[in-house]
Image (cartoon, rainbow, N blue to C red; front, top):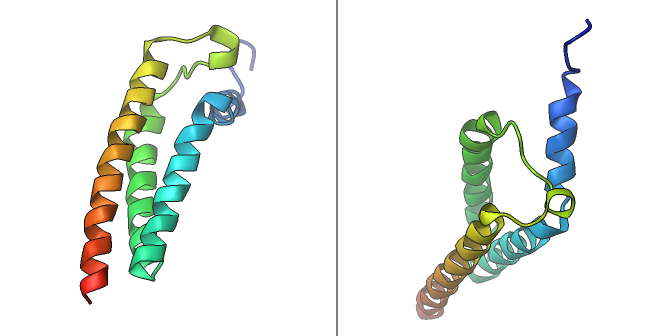
Length: 109
């Protein structure tokens, strides 16, 4: 098996990058979003649906095409980090607006 890489090598790189501190805010915001959704709806079912859609998207569209995920702490900051930060800020603002609207609907009931 010389010249061939071990099947776990790619997985190990992905796990290492997933644990990068640069990704911690994203996981925090997603957890807060799911928690607020459960609190406002008094049910975890909407969160389960949203989380399942996110996982399906990641494992079908992102993971198969992500053969060389870079570590920010090792390789430094690149344009993708800033793109992800911008996405986080934009979608956090949209989530806040959606939750405010949802809170008004929940109050009426």
